[in-house]
Length: 415
Image (cartoon, rainbow, N blue to C red; front, top):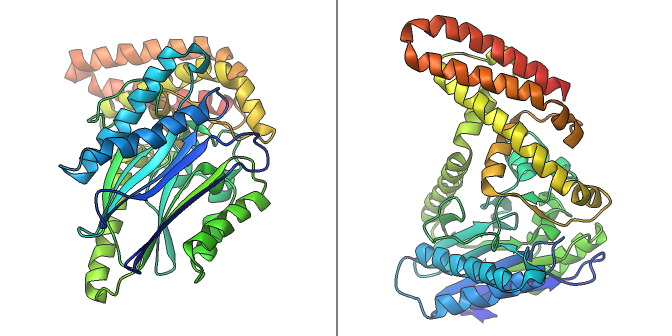
């Protein structure tokens, strides 16, 4: 679809080489007028019945909601539309027990040419990339343990792509009802639309199969969007095609003065950085402080104790969830790329484990350490109460906290 010779939008989906059905969907269309466009990559969560149904509900609900709701901030309207899709999927789950676990993830954007803005709403591990002057930048953030570890530099791109837990996700559409103002549900961000930019929306069937350098090589060609979409999907299939593959491409061509373009690019970079900081502020601080054992400062005792409490939540919460999903993890290791959905409160706790991964751990290891963990939890609670009761005991508590940190290190290394 062409718009005044400057705008192109195109979408395509493929079943892949392993699946027997396609649970992906997409939207690539104009919206309210010739200056607004809607692009969505939707991925039905595999491993549960009805992923394709959930994806189709989202595919229909979001454009229908927006078609009758054009008054208001673009980003707020999009959040409302995604929330409406989420709640429609949840209600469909409730009405049909056979599909009681169906859900999907998606990355959507309203692209406003007149305002030169990209309003993004994102849930899960589908992605939005911007390709500008030969540089590929990921604008969305994966709501998954492995995606988080990749973003903080704990895993390389290829290590993340091949990690057996790469499809354990923390957010999805359909697991529970939400309100549009629930910031823990939708990652919402507004970016400037740079002239001569290509936007790529994709399911993880693409990003799990080919590297960013391969994507960059394809988008650097002077081909049409249809040819580029075909080339991206072909590359994913040749890499194994373990999942459905969906690609939506949007291209904006315009001769904008370089000074204005440079300013817009800086604004986009600031937006990406600030959004990442908001997502990972506490964890990033801990990463900087814990890169080596020598950098464990005990400056504020309360802060350290809160961190320890978070660690215990990881161990206790992960044990039960690991048991439940053990069979699906083994299936993923055998080449299946089904997604496993963890509640949001679990994925937030898992971020601590992302910074300090316990190599080779499993459900049995965690179960065997429960008594020690509970004992340390009681010690932690006692220390917190004493800190509140008497400031004069602060020095003594600091010493106990130091000892406690060492015990936790020993425990973590033993897993």
